Amino acid sequence: MDNTSTPVMPASIPGDGSAAASAADEKQSSQSTLARSKSAPRVGRLRTASVPRTPKLMVAMALPKERPDHVLVHAVQGWGKTSLAAQAPSPVFLMTKNETGLLTLIQHGQLPPTPWLQFPRTGGSMGDEATTWLSAIDALTALLLEKHQFQTLCLDTLNGLERLCHEYVCATSYDGDWSEKGFLGFQRGYETSLHEWRKLLNLLDLLRDERGIGTFAICHTQVKTQANPLGRDYDRFIPNVHKKTWDLTHGWCDLCLFGRFEVEVVADKGKTKGKGRGGSTRMLYTSYTACWDAKNRHGLPDEIVMGDDPRESWQQVQAALCGED
Image (tube, rainbow, N blue to C red; front, side, top):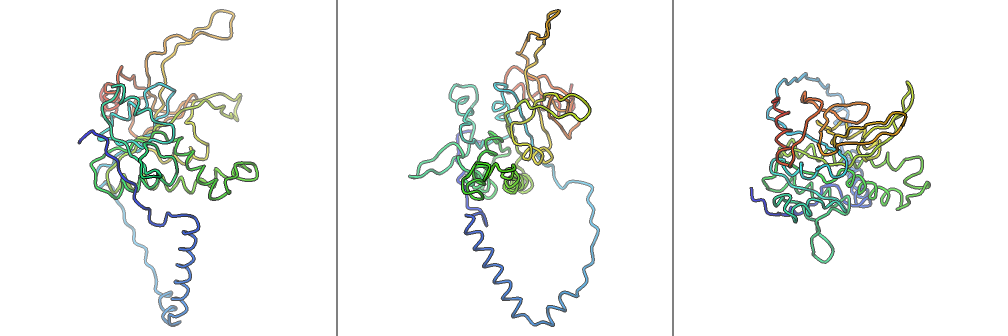
């Protein structure tokens, strides 16, 4: 594949226009359906309704083809999330607002030229970041419909996409009101946003099932206090998105991996606060612990020691996926 930057132009989304247009289309469709219902013979309608439905049991035991994975990696700052994602097969990046680390890495020779999606701006110019929710969805739809050779979609970052989603929902459902009277009132804005977030996840599923494109989602991590019904609360690393978003996304992805630097804490005698040592070895964790969120559906080892450069790190991950020592 040619590694030069090739923009994929967003395509229009069927049924994904403005809220007013969508409501008008839905109303017109309902009126047309009602008109047809009134004009249809009553006997015909009764006869159609009385036709019995016979459910049929259909079972599958083998996939028709190998499916790429939905991968999510959350890690501490500077761990190398973008560099690792760029090693995936035939990648193309979707960068969100203020998340252009890929361009910096390419500019300074840390990564080879890697394709990314571009977005139309007013005046006919093109931008490198998705700055609105609909522009991101349009770009993904174009990736689904248009001809290309990409095999991995890298989302940089997932929390950046969530912010765009919340901005869109606040503008369309709460008249741009972020206060307790609007989006933030009783946390209802986050619940309302799940409808749009499901559209994203469904679109990523279509990219995988119809085009064979896997997802490599990058996410910043955060330390949150975990409520513990059996004892004292404790802190743990989780992706830096809202809990409602994370509950939905965590069940959707095939692999959720957590990255950090290995640090040894040494406590002096008589002191409660220790000193950290090390911090140069990058580790990738694949299973849930009390300290972080992670999971995998591949039987991976609980931890993977990453390499000193992105290519070596990717080889370590691939070796673990293949069951190699």
